[in-house]
Image (cartoon, rainbow, N blue to C red; front, side, top):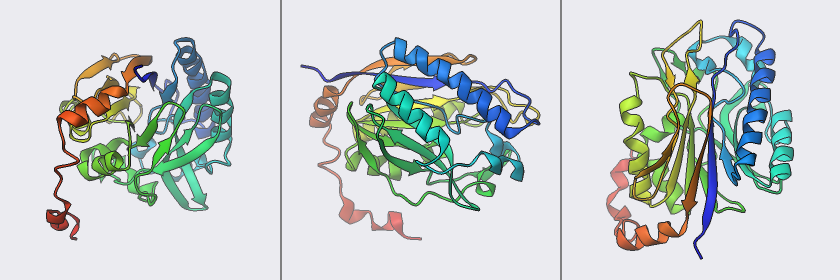
Length: 289
């Protein structure tokens, strides 16, 4: 019998005055996502991923300490606890990107992974941080991740997480495959003109090179007053052959749903023996400074 699971991705716009109270924006975005999560549940979604920094704007568009107000610990913080309750209610595995506080002044761009029974399984911290114009000032807000490339055994399968800018680095994508990932989710915030051409190239290539599914999420809309560009949505799922099997719209909030047959992973890996034919003994130069 095929191992079929239903995956969901949520892309959403902010629609708030971004010069206002960060905590008001946070509450509004959580409320919006709770409605979208309900929609995903009504569609039978079994594993769901939210967008990068889902409960706020993409605030690294500016450098302002007021956004530090959005940090919270994981898993002790209120958002993780809330999503644990939601996951248990809907019997849904969830990947929840959160601005994490490890201790005062030490913050990470993180995703919590929650199993379908509401159990917190662990977290992934974004490894590669951009710090470049026009408005991707992430090193002002985050430390680079230090938890490696974990894979989480969930009710629906083995899940890995890569966050936004990470996707430009194939090394971590390979590590997730070698660590057993069957699905890799990449919650993102990326704008037209900078990366839309790469959006449909890199992650299908990771899927092919490593024989797993990829769920790629991007937010939508223009976030003013910064307006560093259009967050162009187009979230998608692609299969281990690199084929995009479901894609969201460019310009609206959406719950994208795709049915994934995890048995295809074995079929693809038995055909393309990339893991068998690797030559790690020749790759030392890749990790030299």
